[in-house]
Amino acid sequence: MQPDSETQQPETEPASTDAQPEKSRLARWRKRVFALSLIAGVLILVLLGTVEVTSQPRFCGSCHNMEKYYNSWKTSSHKTVPCVECHIPPGIRGEFRKKFEALSMVTSYFTGTYGTNPWTEIDDASCLRCHERRLLAGREVFHNVLFNHTPHLTETRRGMKLRCTSCHSQIVQGAHIAVTESTCFLCHFKGQKFNDATGRCTLCHQIPDKVITKANLSFDHSDVKRFNMQCVSCHSQVIRGEGDVPKQRCVSCHSETERLQRYGDEEFLHEKHVSDHKIECLNCHNEIQHKTAAPFETMSTSCSTCHRDGHSAARDLYAGIGGKGVAPEPSTMYQAGIRCEACHMLPPIGGQMKAMGASEASCMSCHGPRYNDILGRWKTLVSGTLAGVKAEFDRTRTQLALPTHDAGPLADAWNNIDLVERGHGAHNVEYSLALLDASHNMINQAREQRGLAALSPTWPVAPYQSTCFRCHRGIETQQGRFAGKEFIHKPHVIDAGFECATCHRPHEEKPKGEVVRFGAEGCANCHHAREQQQPQACLRCHSDVLGRKVKFQTKEFDHSFHFKDLSQKCADCHLWGGGIKRSPNMNTCATCHPDGFK
Image 1 (cartoon, helix red, strand yellow):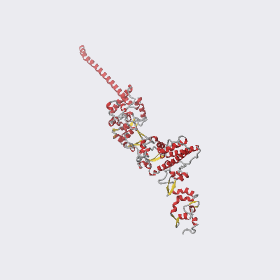
Image 2: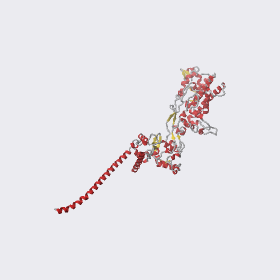
Image 3: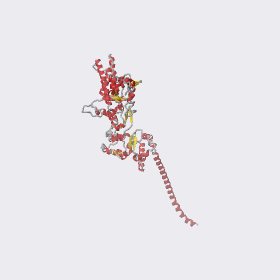
Image 4: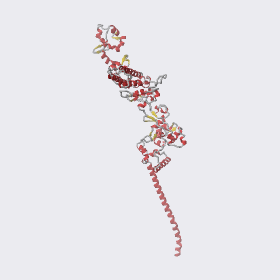
């Protein structure tokens, strides 16, 4: 048995020695693979978690220099859209590129090398993922302005290709990716004449067809198209600024000589700053503003536009300031923003005029032919009143033997007279009349102080105030014809004190073509009652009957024969039955014609 044992033992020992190292190596590799897999899994989980966490808007707002942008996003129309949806363009390349940029920003933040003015670019592709319909939607209304996305995004503008963020940007304080109106104004108005080319009004604004009331002045905008009116007549000083680019602004970003030498190469600069990169327009350009001007700014036109010498009196009168003893009273047109050039539209004639001229044509260019005689009435009324007050002033100064008028009531009276005369009262009729009325009272005050009797006005004065006088001043003395008869306003307005509404409806209520609310026969309600006391006054309205015969029963009746030859009075035939009648009293006729008319 011994030899057998010795023979078998060498066969089993080598096998055991070789198997042990192999098992050890496999075990070590398994541990390594497991560890690496575990580490890889953890890294993947950490990476995925990091991607998820860094994709949340809260993470974007965790840096203090991003806080204001994060807060504006929370209140914007995009508050339900995560930051990465816009700031990371579609596609895997965009994802990796933006994540790398974000990682760089985080590294800069923790190392303290970050900038205080974060900046980014948003590709149009990010916007069009949700807003592609904008290219097909046609015109939309934004702040009462018609806007079409298609030409702005698909066509070249001023030699540059616009991007979504060219107009929608972050520079609007408190808003996130909002429309930057200053960018619109810069593109449309820079280097353009008012109401021309890209700056023409109707490119964005439709002409309203409704009545607009401003400063108690109603204006029918449909007349703009009807009379081919110019927008600048009313809307002046609505564009402020030139939109120029100061060269020193280039140095705030660039220091290389070769780049600074490209200043003035508009096409190249727009391509690099707008088409290739999203640089805010106002980073380079000065702002252009487009808004309604304050009333006094409307007057701030170049003096040489109208006048060849000073014009402060006309400006002050129009603005309703500069008088003594009268509260400021701006012209209604001034309050409505009507600029000087709206009326002063006629060029100087033969070099004799010192200012651009104005006439009835100026009134009609906006208000139509019915305003043909209003300016003339204004001038007549103011000039007549001014002449009367000046005569009072000269008479009083002569009686008081005053060589000058540099103190007291007369000095204030002269200030008002001079303002109306030099400022031309038609610029503000109501204020001018108030100034002259105050001057009249001041003159009488000076007379009373020296024991002289007060003077009565020698000019017509309406006994009441009316909103109608804003346009119809001077009507109180106008003469004309109504219903074929001669008509004078003075006895009705000044003597009898009838207010305008007694006979006339307001413009917005009266039917087209109506003059008085009751027609010609309505005058009889007042006149016939008075003529009962003054029978011969009938001829004021009915004088024409003396020159013609009228049909009466079977005969022709001759008023002239009865009135002149027989000395009959109107009341003899027509005053009966308690009032004045159109048909005669037959009893009166019977005194001469007892058998009637055969």
